[in-house]
Image (cartoon, rainbow, N blue to C red):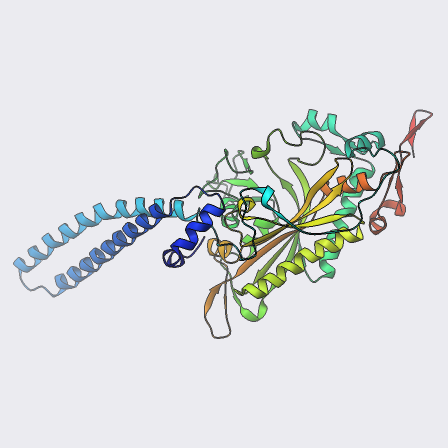
Length: 450
């Protein structure tokens, strides 16, 4: 959400951003609705003042005639207020709906592009492994090693369902423990946030495209089951499953007023993540690349309203993810996201992509975004600077490490010719017995052994 005063004063800049981000928004309509909204509000305020003035006159009136005259005037004011209030509420509703679509003006170094084809590769790091045998996909490896069951997953969970089992489950938990410990080492406060949350947190963080949840456009699962309040009454609040810990972590700071000296605040959250992937039907139908549920460690930072400081924090966040890719021995590249592939609220964004030889392509394993004050205005996250001025904070987030896509990269990059997979050294401390290799199970005397 942008400041309407900024929008009025920078209409040309906002129009260009709307075009560059491919957003369907008529800014002229918004400004007209805003003008009518302000006029309507001023009318209500004028009538309210008139009502108060008449009330004072009534108390001072001395004759019956004066009282009757004031009463008649009061009736006229009341009738006008009855007409004005619904008109204002309708204009306010239109205004709020249009305001949710206004995008943040991106950073000057953000590439201009229509879609993800306009993203710019900043650099690559690590060597892409050259195999002297034909590498298998993670699907083939997982099934041969009996560490993922896609068939049973589809049977029980449906489309995109899967079971992690044996070393597959252990390897994923090792990844999460490794990422969580890394974040703590870097000074981030660890949090396990709620994954069943209210709509305001998803609206505030930008996961609703409009004011309310829309099942046709939002990659969010809504919970249909009736809920209860503390007193036993039926809850009227809608509940949703998070697609990342970001909304829960950001909402933790909603309606807060911090002292500038306490910023930046760095937190990381571990959570299950649920995504309907409605906009990606038909893409990556097989395997783990695009699934409905997974785990992730997410970073969130609350910063002062300083572009340079928040940019440095964003680079710090991305740098930690890069460090983990390096320690995991994964070749990766860093992309700067262009305007056409950028969400409306983002000021500056980067993706990390690891090389996945079985799939023979780069695959996204992380995304870092600076929203400046766009989310903070929705969630009312503020701080007082050293002079006592109240300002909206800048909010940043980054995927420290998700579970399944790095798992794909590890299985495909660490595979051996005999079909086994070597466990990256940095993860072995979290594998039972420090397990170094995942091998195909052998069946002897009706028992499965390694």
